[in-house]
Length: 257
Image (cartoon, rainbow, N blue to C red; front, side, top):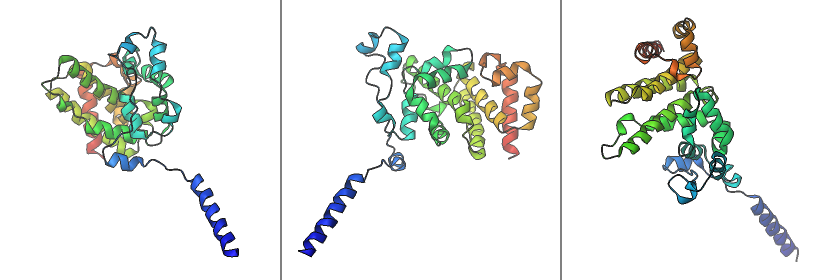
């Protein structure tokens, strides 16, 4: 009888423990397999339901990620969801690019959550590293090519956004500059437009500023227009002259590190 009671106590204890066990998603495992748990927006442009939405607020509302899903998403899933956000073009609706990014953060809970993650900068940079300006497909339509080029711009502007930029380690920021220069070279080779190339220059400039690279800071200090540029007003850049100069500072930084 005593043995039976002892066995019963052990059994009840195990059942109680089992209830407390929670299965946590292995985000690194999924990422290693190339799997993303990104959220698929149920209503998006091109659908009849989207066409029926009568206001910007209505569009924002249908794009929110349910909290039960959001809290359990991997950072890479949030990255992929953010770049798939139907209203991401809002970034370009403001004179200051940072105001556009802040608007996305204020309105879209997926981007807001992404910026709270400690590894958001690392995952965003990894995503940027995997996409090349040379990936343009000659069979794509003009619209598809335009969307691809715009996505690269969104990536560069997001990496330069302060809540992301401040999370980079010095090694990662050096990588940002290296990738920015490399992808700019490819954009030039594949005849990307000036506006498509300016986002590379902006990304490089923001990284150099954050690294407090003295020669570059001295150059900016002498130019009020470039101070506006580095603070998000992209129209203040004289691309041909100042773009080449900023590129040269980027190369100089890499050569001295």
